[in-house]
Image (cartoon, rainbow, N blue to C red; front, side, top):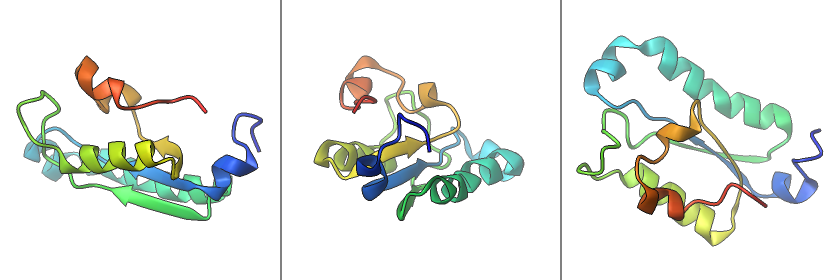
Length: 108
């Protein structure tokens, strides 16, 4: 186990955030989708007992003009203190503006 991932982290939920920006990506880039869903197994292998997959935002842009209920759910879970880690393919794609990033904390 990594010294950055403590037993306290493992006792909380790991969240896998799955997103592709367009419906074209959702239907045409299945390898990316598979890799994102496979992160749930990686979280289990790491030792997280509870893993939640949020994929409500498939086909939704992160530009700010589109509602992203999955991202809102992720922020609520992180802010509640119930999340031990967030798994995603590229963290920079979680939020595209400072207001969204402000709600997330990636430190302990």
